[in-house]
Amino acid sequence: MRTFLLLGAATLFLASCQSSDGAKGKTAAKVATEEIKIDSVNTKPADNKTILAKREVPVLCYHQIRNNIASDSKRAHDDIIAPDKFKQHMKMLADSGYHSILPDQLYNYLVYGAKLPEKPIMITFDDTDEDQFTIGNTTLKKYGFKGVYFIMTVSIGKKGRISYMTKEQIKQLADEGNTIASHTYDHKNFAQFTDADWTTQIDEPTKKLAQITGKKIEYFAFPYGVFKSSTLHKLKEHGFKAAFILSTARDEKYPLYTIRRIIDPGRYTAKNLYYSINKSFNKTKS
Image (cartoon, rainbow, N blue to C red):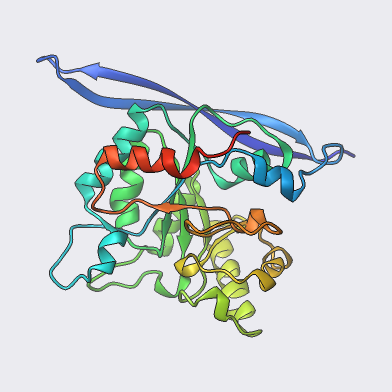
């Protein structure tokens, strides 16, 4: 019997409204999902050369959505974006006609040639910070976007100067159609993994997240964006379909396990982000 992969292709319809004084108002978004059937028996998966030749889909990476404080280091500023700026950036994406996609859609595009919506973009969050739920998810929903949340399981439910998402919040994100994915147990550098780390940093977090969400965990993001080529094959052996780095070059032998992302720094204006997306991801043709 043939087996089929189902891909949710989101089509975003943008509608803008005008306020009484004629100024441009908020942009509303509506998502319609249609199922695309892929014959995984008779459709030959793309080889690495074909995957690398495809136009890259922009993938954004966020960490903390909050205002800077005096104790933040200069380096930390790249990983912190103020709530008002984050909201402005999401509005810019919606106003510019971008459609958010999720990892299954990207995987089926790269491997099986599935179609994507016009101007696709992926919005991802690392490290489990609670502001990604309270501000990030709330803002995404306003524009009809979905996100990918790479969870560091050691931090789940912890409170303090930085508070982290609870199991209930993670479950809600999954139930609302977002993707929950792995970011190790405690952010250990992937390039420094020992044999034991494949259990503590990979298998146990995957199992925990699957228990929380009731869904299979099939995607991974490397802490610090750092990977080690010689062990990339093990990610497939441990159940992952794809993995995400940051802005360094993809590995030619494992392009699915080195999908590029860029950080949206807190210092960027919405216009800066727009130009960064186009500069970083519009280099190749499909």
